[in-house]
Amino acid sequence: MTRIESFGVRISVDEEGVHVFPSSTLESWPIRDSGGDVVAHAYGMLLRDHMGPDLAVEIGEIRVKVPIETATCFEKIVCEHLHGVLIFVTQGKIGRRVYPDSGLSIPIVFCPETRTAGGSANDILDDDEYEERFLHDRVERLISRPGGFSWIPGTMTAHRGIFRLLPNHYLDLDNFTATRFWPRNDEYRLGMSVDEFIESNVHDLRQYMSACARQYDCALSLTAGYDTRMIFCASRPVIDKMTVFTFSVPGTGIDAYLAAKICNDLGVQHNVMPVIQASEENQLRWDRMVGHAVREMNRVTHPTVAALPHDVMISGVYGNGKCNYYRADLRTINTVKLTAESVVLRMGLPSDPEVLDELTAWLKSLEWLPSSAILDLAIVEIRNGSWAMSQAPIQKAMKPSLMPLAQRSHQGGIIQVLPETKGVGLLYDKLGEALWPQAMKFPCNRFDDYRDVAAKLSKLTDFRRVRRYIRKRLA
Image (cartoon, rainbow, N blue to C red):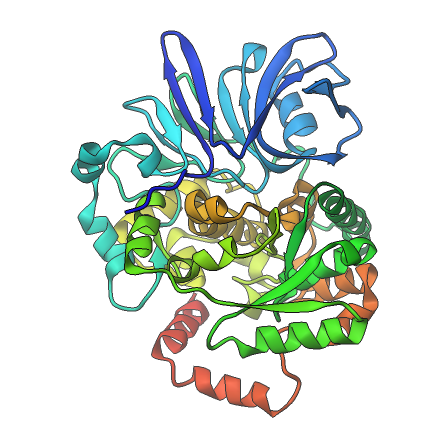
């Protein structure tokens, strides 16, 4: 089997200190505050033209123009306002911690016993340890069961004693425990106006995309859905500097059809990329590089992204402004008391004892939030954090990807806008119109003809879809 370098960082802690080994495609920068102290190091891919007013890059360092006296200060000034694909390892008065960026762009799993961390179990275990710790029963119950692709949710992995760091949590390198640091109780308010959300996001999304275009040769993914449409709309000022593409995946003809229609109407060049199937050997390599913790369609198609002749791919991951887990009860969701059982049902996860225990522990740190915000965070943390980002060690080794919708301003706004105001796609309709109204002429996820009816009827013949729908309605 041909070995390729895993994307991410490997961290070990011993008597001599903290040792960080980034993959060869990642850079590193000391982070120095106004008092001259190095308070942390950043590793990854930094968007140099999109950062907060108190931050700058000078002589190979990230300079903070104010003192960093506390961990909360670091989180607010640095973590929330440096963008790209990043991870932060702090030191000194903050303590020895690992902070992910707001999208967990560089995944982290960790082992308290060996005091090591990496992108997956593959990065921190040798072959013998990998097999000895492998939880065959867990993988069989949560992934290998009949029914197709799935993943191991939350902090669990496919290996005994290996835990996943979720978005919005930091890893303490002294005791190897994870702690939530966002959202913060003293800053949260339910009831942010749509106008306030749009004003903030129009600015931040455009800034992000412009910074991408200046720094990288970018391939922008466009599908029939809302999330990539938002990114496309935000790219309006620099769209001529980007390549817009759609993967031609069997069974998803609406993606290529609608993307081509939008681009043709706006005079934007559009490319359809044929899917390249992975060999059996490469699929087994994919399994190992993700630590056997997820099995998804990318396992079969991952060579496709490597064929993109661009520096980076820009994706719509973390677009969670569509009330996915409470679409049927927008006006009443915040009168509902969530339980692990109800969250599992809403998310379509298996009612497995380990999954229920995982969700019970996860909910405890969010009890003070309204139910709508908790379910929005379930998409960010339980789904994207442990499903999408667990694929990064191999997927981003094929092609690094940037995620504009993972910005803290976007995620923070999503959980504060009232559910009935957000609606099912309504918030993104308004955001898209503010960014590029002509690009919103065509409805998302619809042919807008007889094929939409045929698509709905076809879903009724898919037992798994019907079962998931019934489970969510029962929740």
